Image (cartoon, rainbow, N blue to C red; front, side, top):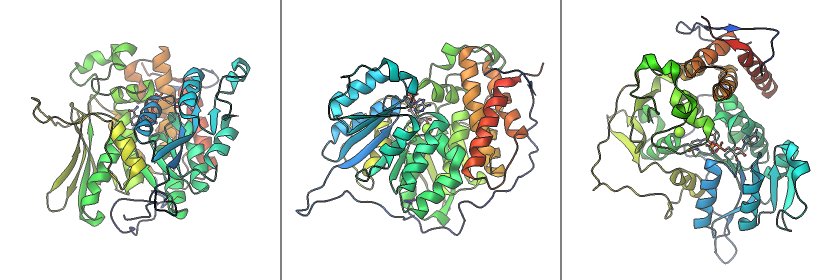
Length: 439
Ligand code: NAD
Ligand code: MG
């Protein structure tokens, strides 16, 4: 697996983390039963022909119609000589997938929501494009021998199986779907390493850390500092958060993203998931990972070395930069992303996240300490909690207590198989649907 600029560490990726006893988590709230609610690793250089010309890298884009998906296509549009999307998937936005297929003429498209079969007209996709369906279609698309890289840009744990299948087939993965590492961190990172596949981050904080880590060795790092915008409720009185509306929670101040990650940013569960993602990507322990609030979203994250030097990656908030870096690494090419204008009057602020405002953060550290199936439980609980909040069946301030209750109460397995992770995922989804707040 391509890891940052350091030799392989002696730490084993799938070492069980043990079940550290939690002192801080109480698992508040009630689950109502019987009621159904709902280093220097290997880097693959661009392929070249016998006459020395670069061949375009063939890319499969899972989640092509989402925020990351459409921005990935924008990057491809700027570098069609290097990046060729030959496979696209969408869940339900078939109209946009058709438009994308007409522009990029991929070999295959896959629609994962199989209920769309009946409504699909006969001549909607270009004649050379094969149409696949569901998980089987994804599997066929990501194992295509000609494909070099899979961009995992689906939302939620739905991204896990496709990524695992791609790594098993020896494909490089550019990973936006953080839930994949939160749920299946040890399995995914072990697979990447054993198949010598690169696993490069698209998430802006992790791309920033990855870029900063090119400046030293792993044993020279004191800590990594993930920045967080603070979301839409950074300055709102904490005692009014209980009545936060869906529209208020969806109004992110600096990033324009899909609805799930936008709610996760308001609760800061997004940063909790990113703490776990950083742990698996870079092999740092919970006490080497720090979070600071940086409302401008310009410093995307930092690495502090033992000598006190702090290296930061700085650019305007535009996901096309980390997407492109993951697809062209180690090369840096001109990018469609916005450029920083340091002559513009601006102030960059940093502050400590308040634990009373952002109780989700601690859950990220707790999952690293507990290890095993904890990430699967937390992620599934959060996915359900976000849907329940968006449907209006729980309040904004119920999201974190729900997640904490499921994390604490789930049937823990210290060294889980994929089946164990999926079983916990299912259990957590069901229980999260039944959870009611304590009065
Ligand atoms: P989005 O909701 O805009 O798009 C999600 C994509 O996944 C769509 O193409 C959709 O068709 C597909 N999808 C949805 N449900 C699916 C299912 N059940 N099975 C298969 N495909 C499904 O989401 P997004 O904001 O693009 O985020 C995608 C991933 O990238 C998430 O994991 C998110 O955390 C991560 N991420 C996003 C951003 C961002 O700026 N948007 C930044 C960093 C990381
Ligand atoms: Mg991020």
